[in-house]
Image (tube, rainbow, N blue to C red; front, side, top):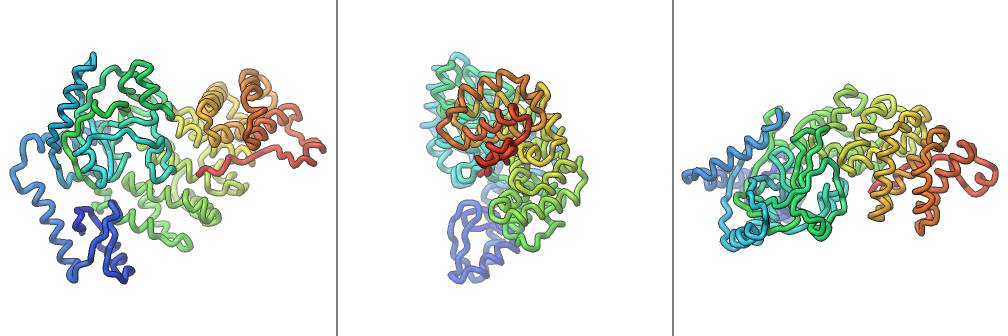
Length: 489
């Protein structure tokens, strides 16, 4: 079905929404538009779908529009096969002389005026604004300003562009095909989460290009810090078709409305390895339950893991879609944080190696979420602590800690320090050798104004001094040898 705002809605889910709304109205889940329900809504909105598509495609497709469609499809499948297919519903050409004039003036000011065509993912409610006013530099560091569960933008406040597969991670069902002036480009293989245009321009760059060989070319993206460098050319409405030839939104809506007292595990497992958005819906569902009903979150994630081969589940930690990796780590972090049995199960099922790979990722938002999962495991499982004292792991702890302190990121600081303290309660000999970390903690955190951060640093040193043994004085002071990662959200 297609609503008057042109957004798709599953027939079954739409029927439920209509029956539950006594006012005879329905709210579009994509853009929140409110529509009066016609008497013969099934007939009216079903035929409107055909009319809407015909308005876009029946007039002779211009050569430019055909090229835009080919560009998106080629870009989407360029770096390998996908369990989902992209279906182009409509293409709207943007003709804005004012934006083009700004783009041409910007071209004159850049020493490198080479134009590259890339894709930007967004939501339908923002498409008209981009077409009329151009792109906006975001005011939030979060990938999704309405939901911080998806993590932070890789290079802070910038406009992000990528090839097809990566671009669809952002927004929902809308791509903007854009001509981009890159200017002077900083090449990097690791993220910097808190950048602003002022910081990047002061360095002498206009764009940051990220490509990490461990993650492959599919995850490369360009962060542009000046909106005049970006000229929207086409607005493309698309949707995904899953492996069962079903429009992905039908399954997503079922998951959103699922009763967690009696979850449908067959449906959850199907979605977990379906399209990217179906997978994200499952992981959000489980992660959110970690707050609202931890017992059910623990039950569901254990059941899902038990039903699936570990090698298949671990593939989520190496998923091409970084949002899926972030949401999976979030679900692991928030499920059974203080449940020793679940932490033991996660340790045996997932093992430390896959989490350590996430720890040393070039994307810091993935890295410190892996720290959180490892911190909870290390609070209960002594066997995981020795493997976290390797040179690469220690170097990553230090890098994350320094970045957390420099940007006053309380959550990141507590996560890393609690993990190192948990390691130190049995691996005090190895941690005692890390003098640079000890010096850094002593200089920056021992007198920190945040009491919880100060306590975490004290715990680290007390574990090294006491060799994991709590003295009577420390017991009377309420001291504990280990600590969980802080509540993520």
